[in-house]
Length: 132
Image (cartoon, rainbow, N blue to C red; front, top):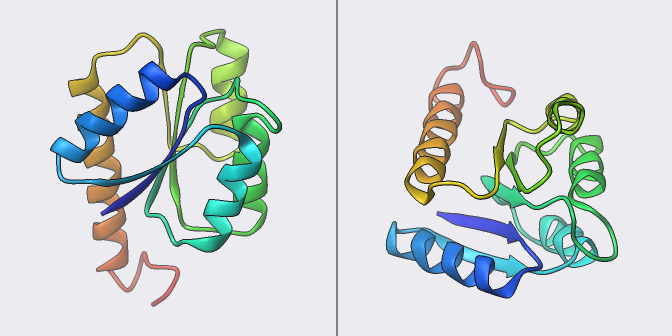
């Protein structure tokens, strides 16, 4: 399964990418919002991990653009911004989850699996599916 990772900190991105790959995911890593939007237009990702504080276009703007296209991509915001208002804003814009740095990578993997599991349940249920 292919995941988009938007993260501008090389150390964090490489650690996340390596862990996600070890868990069986294919990871496309981009470091700014413009690259993320290009990737999201070019590929059908089941999940995107978006940092907020990235160059060119922040993760919230990427999320807003993604949701304006009615894309089914699940989104987890992974950011150091921990203020309640920012979490509310991210979730209100359409994020499926919000994880604050620093985080435990095992918890992030659990959240990824939970979101992807729900996607499969919805896709396999013609009553819930948007495609059914």
